[in-house]
Image (tube, rainbow, N blue to C red):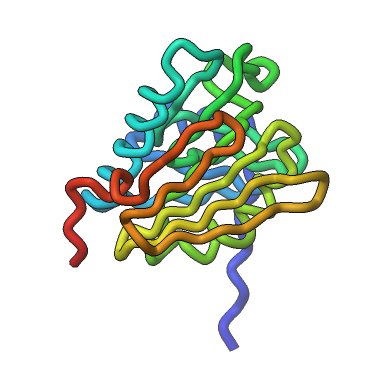
Length: 191
């Protein structure tokens, strides 16, 4: 019988020390440090497409838009993570004692990869739902036209819609803007 390998548990302070010195990003999940895998060109392009669409649609409004490298702290589940795209209403709120970690997104989007899609749909979404300010969650498949859209309708209740047709548009409830599915996939070559 192989002995069980004991997981190393880190404090948030140890995580920040390691994260700031590292060339790669890691998620902090309740004391564990989980390295984040690099994205594919499709993953990156879809995140940029969405951030660009939102940047134009929300110009002059009271929002901040972040893509890929902005850390989010979710205190109820002790999670530091990096959503692919995130929108915050102003004023932006930061984790106490930090200048690089936000806490108040109203919209989060994740581009699904084979290694993270189950986590993004389940455990990560459960964590995101504990954020009081979050009102919309978008999951975008990078391997074919498929978008899953969740809108918070009340406490503990989310409305789910899905889109497989590039000619369709989804309505972002929180910002009152339309996103054409085909625009999310501009320049994408499915392989």
